[in-house]
Image 1 (spheres, rainbow, N blue to C red):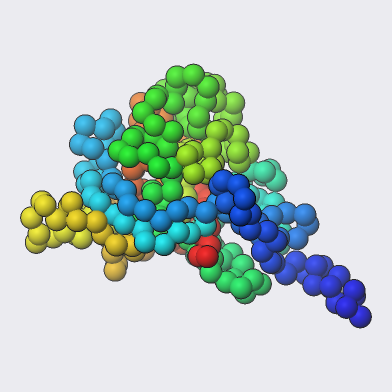
Image 2: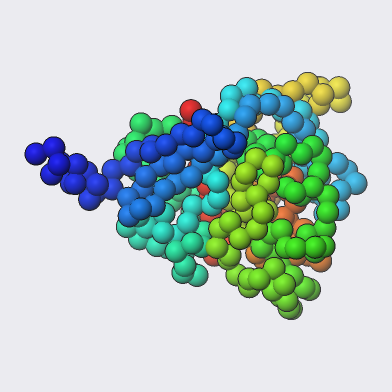
Length: 294
């Protein structure tokens, strides 16, 4: 009876953490999704970092004010964006407009991501969620301070490709010198200092926070400039959103840029760049990755 029961459990793809490596870096959590698929998450250590971008950084927006942030607890973050085969193993469908098992799942709304996480939590011991904006940037920087890109300061157009971004004058011509003209299979480019893939380019990634352009300055409103030097502890973003386009959309933070980001148009693959999207809207260049609280 136990054998039959175990087979039934496997057949409906109940999830469980298979392995938590302790002997090598980075530490990885593997979550069984069934169909021989695992969700891989990397342990991100607690620490302090400077969030935002220097004023002289190319492409910088005025909503990227530098400020100190402390994350007091370590957390696991998806090693790469959730793929289409991972999504389908759990959700039983594939909303992506550009199909491919190893491609990131796309066309998912923020609300869709919550449904994925809800199901993931229901079939495990729980603890899964979207990253906060601060967690995302801290992890994406990979231990580097005040650098424009997740790999440092070198141009993404020098040497071997480092990210899936638009190569050529946008929107007229994509030279595809990075190997892809749309979404790329996850792990196609080198990982950052924390062992995370695709934090720059490929697809925008949803974060938990509400978006408003003045989110950083709001934290220090009424205080003098020295307050920027006092680290914020585990910030979770503003209490409500503001759509910078003047609409009534409930906008959430998106990070990382996508394959449509170019050097001549937006440079949105910079690690400090802040973007937004309506939580009920999914696009062909939007995906996500999960956090697991230890």
